[in-house]
Amino acid sequence: MSAPKSSLPNKPNAADRVRSADLPVAWIMMLGLIVAVGPLSIDMYLPALPSMADDFGVSTAFMANSVPAYFVGLVFGQLFYGPFSDRVGRVKPLYIGMTLYVIASIICATTDNEYVLFVGRTLQALGACVGAVVTRAAIRDRLTAKQTAKAFSIMILVMGLAPILAPSLGAVFLQFFSWHSIFWFLAAFGTLNLLLTKFFFFETLTEENRNVRPAREVLSQYWDLLKDPTFNYPAIGGGLLMGAMFVYISSASELIMDTYGMSATHFGWLFGMNAAGFVGLTQLNQWLTNRFRILSILRFGAMMQVISAGALFTLGIVFGTDAWLPLVLACIFFCIAGLGLTQPNASAIALAFQKRRAGMASALQGSLMFSVGIFGGLLLNLFPVNPVLKIGIAMFALMSLGTYLIWQIDRNLNLDNAE
Image (tube, rainbow, N blue to C red; front, side, top):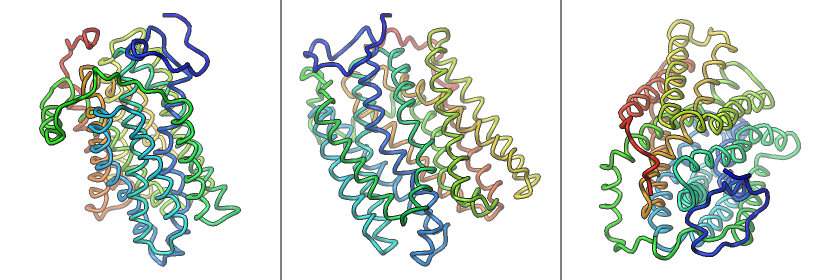
């Protein structure tokens, strides 16, 4: 493999867009900036939840419902953008989604009603999710399965800075401004994405590879995807593993700030530490994919996650909120860091054989992840137990099922034959 490109590529001709022997690193990193709007939108306002709850006159737990409200938009938005991008290309959906995102962020920044905020958060997600769908599909359009796994690792290096920095950045905003300023910042970041799309995002889906089947067949095409074992095991299994992270996001403020009494600043540091572990292992994943099979790395990461979740579950049963905080945080750290080995590889396997429906496959994979996040949020509310046990039950249940499905992937699957 030749040296990676170090600058943004010129718009290539159609023949160059489908495959490249080199990894277009700068282009992939630009995609990471576009998709970073998602984790920024989820994580940056988390330190503000207690102060937002005070302003609206509700509890922090009630205000935390704005997180699953965001996930609802992610689930349904991705299911729309996937087939739409397979039909019209990758560029137009980005313009539509990012414009909606900017408008929704302004609604959130200016509202004084908690229910309008929930609606605004859902609209934010309906716009933001286009980045995740289109970027994954665009990478699949250009690269092989092994290159795709590496590309996702590079992209996470960029977008992974968002959950590392976002809570701390949110805490800084709270020191000088009100929580409204966070949503004004997000509106500005959405505007930046529109500019990146305009000047640097070239079309990757050639005319001959577009899905021309009638729109009324979308549901049947999604059903065909769900029945495809080359897609369903890695997509659903990876979605369950990633969904456990959204359980943590939904409960992090209550667990760390309310239960253990951490300040917003310390919360940002702890949250960033977990995200740093995630990003660090995605970069290790690039090295590992040159030496081991993608499926082997995926299975190792899944085992790492489920063992850590089991330890957290045990701490919750035995000690509850008396559990030593560093030990609780260590279990959570390995649960989240393990995603660096599972998510790039699960995504690469799930998309490897989906040449003409990469957008749909990317959308369905993303929707599955956030559906699990919604389900996990409901799980948290089902158990009237201490916060440590509550998060332990939800994460261990999801990761156990996800690991089981990962181990059902055909170990003889030949990714080198993927078109």
